[in-house]
Amino acid sequence: MPAPLPIRSHRSPAELRRLARHERDGRVSARLLALANALEGIPREEAARLAGMTGQTLGDWVHRYNAEDITGLCDLPRAGRRCRLDEGQQAVLKTLVLRGPDPKRDGCPPQTGLRPAGDPGCVAWRARDLCRAVERQFQIRYSEGGMLRLLHSLELSWQKPRPIHPEASAKAQAWFKKPAWADAGRRRTPPRGRDDRAVVRG
Image (tube, rainbow, N blue to C red; front, side, top):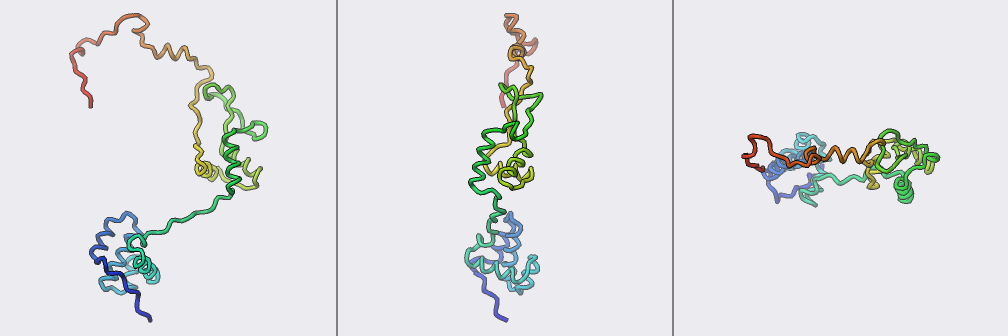
């Protein structure tokens, strides 16, 4: 059986344990402890078992540690699943979302009740409507959650304008906000017993 790969000794086992205590990533902390145990003379298989890994896995981390020091013990970023829409299809989808839906073509029902200001018959995309539009145009199926994640990756925010009631009166709102004493033409007098109190900030 070949001898195990030597571990760089520029850091002592005590230093590796100290780094493991302050490490936020539990997997990196376990790798540091396994290296510290191996440097102290514990057999590699036992050091790996104490850290919850196999001897072969510890050998791989020794290679990474010797080559890249502590940074080599971190997991490499994962690319994740590729988007099912290519760049051209994503651009078409973004244009479609920004243009807004056509109720007759896309089947988006007009909103009732509360509507954004100045829009008598607002029509807005729903996640299910976009799923249908993408399946109809590209023959690719998305769940509603997947569609929302896709929109987020396209830097589209799932927000709507602040709604107002269709019967809201701007004149009534302005009158309601105006203090009653301003209508009476009187100067506002402070409440009794409170005029000598200082305003303390903070």
